Image 1 (tube, rainbow, N blue to C red):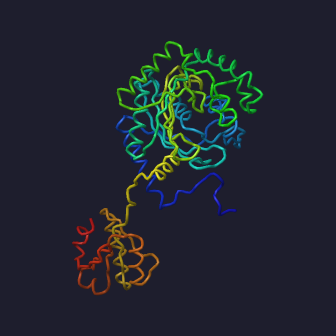
Image 2 (cartoon, rainbow, N blue to C red; image 1 turned 90 degrees about the horizontal axis):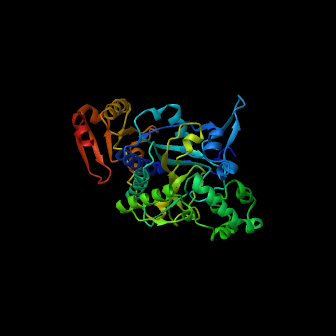
Image 3 (cartoon, rainbow, N blue to C red; image 1 turned 135 degrees about the vertical axis):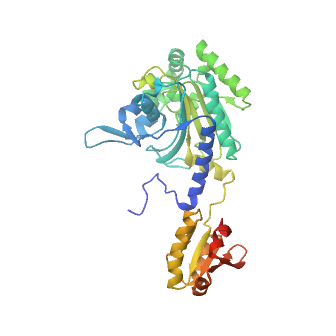
Length: 416
């Protein structure tokens, strides 16, 4: 039906938008405090960007991307996540030639074809931050600390921070062989997707959502036992930094994240308040992503955070939102002369910062006052022929129901 939104999408109506505005303002405030600058990238990219950047063995690339050919027979994909596009913009604009690090934040729409459920839609919105140009674990600590501060300011409780190291290509090669040795006797018990992953990227099996595959993976070897010295030292530096920041965390070797580009640090903020999809915020380090999509060998680290999931979590846990901003005044008019004066008055008041309106339905006086009260206006500015001739209005406080005569030249000071 034309009157139904496509499955997996959701309208954000005016009565909900104040919640969105609130979390956006808090997020931008924390980004500014941490020195991140906003970037906006296109909603679609060349498909190869995500195939090479996100990883061909991921569920996103194999099952979930919205891909189509444009009129020039180019393969185009709606953005399934934010990082790859930001990396592409960083390279195309040659920001790597500037003094490093480069620190970006963004809010963007993303698209994945999957089964809609609580906190997960086919069109969803994402906050993200990225730091390019440094190998230091100080950057990893900063992005985790910023996420922690942001979530705490929103009043979200009962979150767990879980961290892991997914190593580098050198130590992952040994770990993948250990995983193949472990999974080989169970190969026939794995889902078809994981059978394919067995050779291409067995680490993806650990992240499989199939209950049967998850059960098989429970006793798989831990990557922490296979880290090279560089990755092991980096993970220790990360833990030292989180300890210094007094941020609680749990080391969880099963966290590999859903994207192939991660190296070393991987982390997630977990909750059990939004059903099966328990990750509120996740991210990590991706030292090879920029070179993988055709750039120089430049390291990076960041996180992504689903806004719909965040709002659902806030609602489920009773987090407080600020009250919706209300209109200051409705200009209530009676008679043609008052209506014409009301048009000019409303324009003058708006130019001086007053949020006011006229009743475009042209109800009678009783109807206008009822409308103003129902919609939460603070005041009714009542103007009729008598008020016009005397150069004043009747100002009614709709909360207390008190009313007073106010000269027009004093009205602004009463409303502000």
